[in-house]
Length: 350
Image (spheres, rainbow, N blue to C red):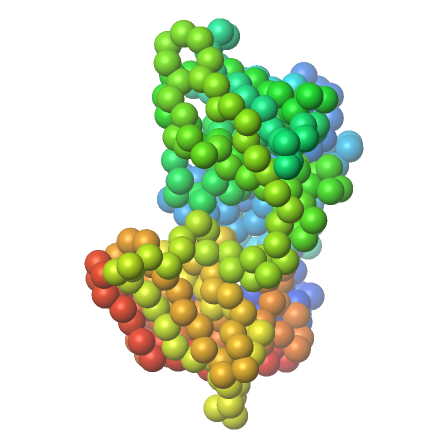
């Protein structure tokens, strides 16, 4: 009952953020390096002290003057800022762990957040990963190359250990400590360094993942081929999980308040009962029959919701709902098992 109540309150707060300005709150701040503005830094805002315990409730990028602004519900938050130098090298981070910031109604200011190199993030010179990025054999300049130490993130988001941009000939080099790294490449048409990919953007991964970096020298990825994002694939943001023989799955139908099937709806599966931050799984859009199916790569408890839009605050007219077949809106998936008839009814946000 506690979990169900907590999620219901969270859902109401999200809806209220677009409907009742009295509950709106804004957190502002500025990222600096040696007292100078730090543009292009990633700001991650958490509602728990340890950032590994839950995904951020909000992310933002600093502007040219190093400032950021994020709309939140009033409460206590923890702000982490990360800047990856354009030329590669160790990331610059804000104080870790971050101090709590109390956000009240109206505007709150986190002040200047100083970024510096953290010893644990320092890369040893003379070792790392190097390679070349190509598109149909042609070099890709200015592409962002990310190195992750695991695949839990789906090779997406700000949890990478290092990043760098490719040179004119498509080559890159990133200095990192010994270990195993997964290399992913993104090249957005607008040259931005964050945000969801769009049709026409380039994306790719190293075929040799994971790449092993040893105590001396550089691991060579060879040529990493990238290609344009297929618009049809943007609907299937399953975080790298594809259908496989014997894979577990969650399936059902999405309907409106009148019980009729709804098309064009995304179904989300979270591992956190609060259903905040990025979901673990996102379905393709439902078809005319309202049916959906999610393939699950690992057993566990998943908290289910659905919405007709991706990202951003809920607005009047949006359709939203949660799975009502259990008190806490969850389903439990066993290894190789399948959950059927996980139906979800949506209501319109007023």
